[in-house]
Image 1: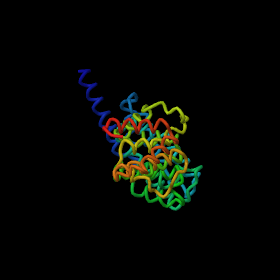
Image 2: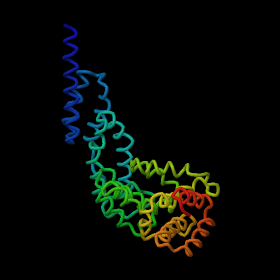
Image 3: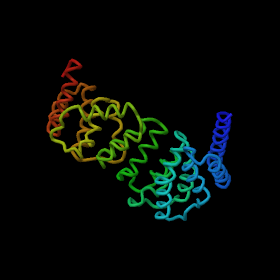
Length: 297
C-alpha cells in the first residue's frame, strides 16, 4: 500500500512539474508559479524544483528594459548568469527555446543602437544570434560601419552565415577574423560546431612546428594553410578587407601559386614559391611536401 501511495505521489509531482514547464514555455509566469507552489507542497525535494522556481519567478518579474545599452547588458547578465543554468537544469537540450523569446525582446529593444565594443552583447546582432534569428543577426552586423574591420562584426557574421548557408558562406569572414583577431579564432570555430572545420583546425595546429610564429599569432596563418589543403577556398579572400601582415600575404600568395599551377605559368610560379619561402619556411615546406606527394614539383 505504501509503495502504491509513493508511486501516486511521484506521478502527481511529475504532472505538476510538467505543468510548470508548459506554463514557463508559454511565458505564463503566474500559472507557472502556481504550479511550482503546488509542487513544493507536494514534493519539496523534487530535483528540478529550485530551477523551476527561479524561471517562474523571473517570468513574473520580467520587464523589457528601456533602449539603453547598459540596461540591456544588465538584462543579458541576468539571463546568462541566473536563468540559463536553471533552464538547462529543468529543460535540458530545450533550454535555448525557453530563453529565446526573452533574448528576442532584447534584440527588438536594441534595434538601431550604435555598435559599442564595450557593450557588444547589447547589440542587435549578438542578441539575434542568441535567439536563433540568423538573418536578422547578419543584417544587423552588416549595418555596423566598417564591419569587415571589426572582430565582433566578423564573428557575428561568421556564425550567422554558417547557420544559414553553411561553411562555404562563412569562410570569408572567418578568414578575415583570423587576421584581425587571431586569438578569437579558436572560440569562433568551437561555436560553429562544424566537425570538419574543427578537424582541419586541429590538423593545422599540428601540421608542423611553426617555429617562426608566436602562439597568439598562429591562428592568423590558418587561412593560408587551409587554402593549401582546400584550393577551392582561394575564392574566399575577397571580403572587402585585406591583411598586409605576413599571414594575410601568405594566404593570397598560396591562392596565386595554385592559380599559376593550373595555368602552367612556371616562370611566375618560381618567383611566387620563393616569396612564400621568405614569408614562412614551415608553410613553404608543407607546400612542397604536398607537391611531392602528388607526384610533381
